Length: 177
Image (tube, helix red, strand yellow):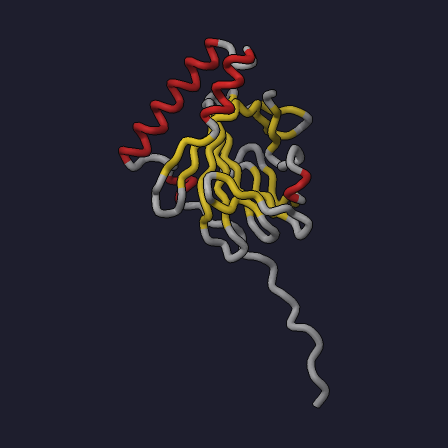
């Protein structure tokens, strides 16, 4: 079954999401902290969520994908996770998309892997992904692979993004003199 995903990650309460910034006119449109009650999420061998991680979500109107750049608690890139989807739209006052199950994972070293092909194929067999969407996804996959090989994907605004600094921690009480 296809699911709607939202820029504020409300669809994933197990990640204990905390919206840091949301501006549909900016890139990234959403920056979300993974909260202290989060469950660890691993996909394609990469840790994508645990407390302290930051997700920066990049929505591109008219494109059949959304990019989530995932940063660990120290601000280091963990992965770019690309969801193939129906082009993003606003729903319930938040950018969102209908996830079509097929994902591309790009690790910091540039290694790329297509994930969940079997889930995507099951959705096709179930009839939830109509032929026009299948053609759009095939075109998006070909374009992403071509751009990745040419070194132009992820786009510069994604590759150059850095998450906000975590708030400073309190030094705690001072010892008595």
